[in-house]
Image 1 (cartoon, rainbow, N blue to C red):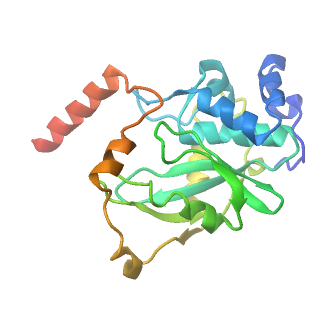
Image 2 (tube, rainbow, N blue to C red):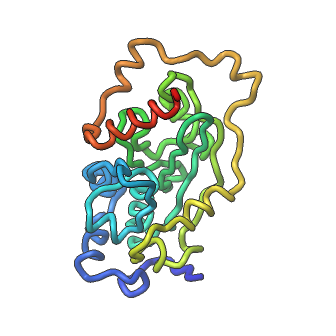
Length: 229
């Protein structure tokens, strides 16, 4: 698989305008601003794992889709395209693009909430970085759910025709992240001391960048009714 240090347009299979967007994102701050500016992909019509081209075209993404775009931008500028997977219990996983500055790790993140956004490059280890998400990583029952983090995954191990210039969902990337070695952040003994979010934290967590569409709310209501039957 291609292990080039810098990805050219021909390597990625992108058009000139598509590549130009990534070429302009030459700092982590610019990458994160672009990712924040993407509308939220609420997956109303079903689960997706859209490649970079489709995200650029539709200007919407969720976590792994935003992370792949961010990783691709780093690769265009000579840095490895690295993803980090964080696993939770009774909750969704979260995927971020990670990078290093002066020996410290940072993360680019796509999320609709306030707590799981980007992290500045101040963390000595990936464990420190992952732990910075622990307190805010909670489910709808206010349980703090983050449990594991993965080894960093270099997307140069996957054909760019799949995750960059593809026209179909790049589920292979999600599968490879799931197969990675993961490390525990906390054990059962420590979990005994973990508290639920309090009412104030719960209200703060309701702050969203993009309002949930009516179609999604109706879909969730239908799922709730099914569970009650």
